[in-house]
Image (cartoon, rainbow, N blue to C red; front, side, top):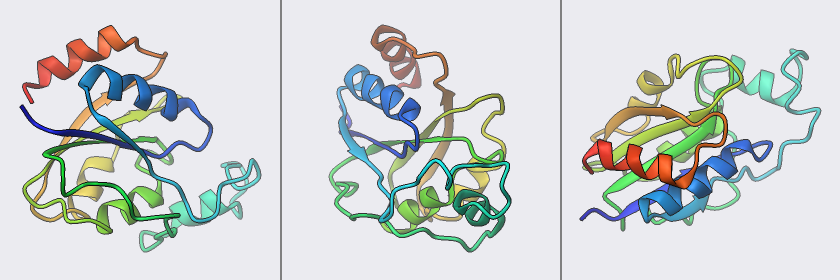
Length: 159
């Protein structure tokens, strides 16, 4: 049986709720990916091209600093990485997270929450951030899926 970790970034709490249910369903440890400077409501205003999130997402080189680097990636075989979809991909802080650890030989399964779009470019972008890892597009966890529903999904992954 593989050791599992659910690592997630949540700006508004929606992804956090999904991640907590997924960790319970998968029998996984839970780790919150936190930015060094928390996002404010103004930072998240996607309608403002000068907002922090808009500026970060406009630059492929953007790597917002993490609050810590305490995720036990090395001690796990399977890492679920969750995030809200921003501009049809993962937020820039997810690239920071993926590049801060050695994921070689790990299975990374992405999950996300979204107001209307799918994973977009997330899988391809994150593959470049984690050389040697197997990165799989997982599932959009919209609508507060139950622990039971998530357990069935995890079981279907065969991990």
